[in-house]
Length: 353
Image (cartoon, rainbow, N blue to C red):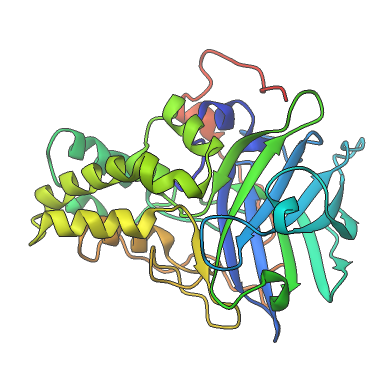
């Protein structure tokens, strides 16, 4: 899976679990930003957002690792029906680094598109999870790698999709390209808690499957990664990613394993999506442009890591032309992922701010 259940905090409270981030061209002169939260929403997790959490799309307008733009989303307490209000703010310069401030752009309610000033739109609610991939095969593949076995045949049969029929909560913004502040930018998402003590970042996301391949065990390492900033990624995590990629390259028979491992590390770190507004979206770690809802992130990432095409599939989701471009939620009679995977066997309480 992508960032689903990637840390103890994410397992305890899915409202703090950033799953996937997308950015792609919208109508002429605009782009659409999407972030998904709450894996397996409605079964394993709630269908709401935390009122004491700040959800952000963060942008480095020069393509670097220091943000200078942020779209900030905050939520009211849910009403009796579970509906909330979302406020959209926009911060520029040093104000985007931290805090809650920003110019107010608009507000709306669950499941209803609303206008955002500067010519944009906003929406949030329950939708089908747009990510897909053969997670069962990936689990087995990673287990084999740990035992020094390379088993590409795990992905050659009819691919499965553990997330089929499952939902997430999503936030979508359509914004003018000018608000990115540049023509070649870097983007990621983050969540922080606030209100009771000092503001504290608890989640961030950009590249799908970074955790699944290089930090597969939820624990202190993934908590630290989620609390960090892209500015420190290469120094803090470059060797971890490089060594893991080198191990795979040696097992898969890549011609120059050291060179390949360095390329993989450079593609994944710092953990950001590169985006050139106005150009077609195409996800490819380190060399693509943003990420579209129908880009095969699973196959593209797996192929990069092993050094040859592997696990490539087409999107199982229909194209939705109208904003927010997300497929309506499904209500299949299937067990909760947390039960299937035994993620909460010992019980826990959601983390406090």
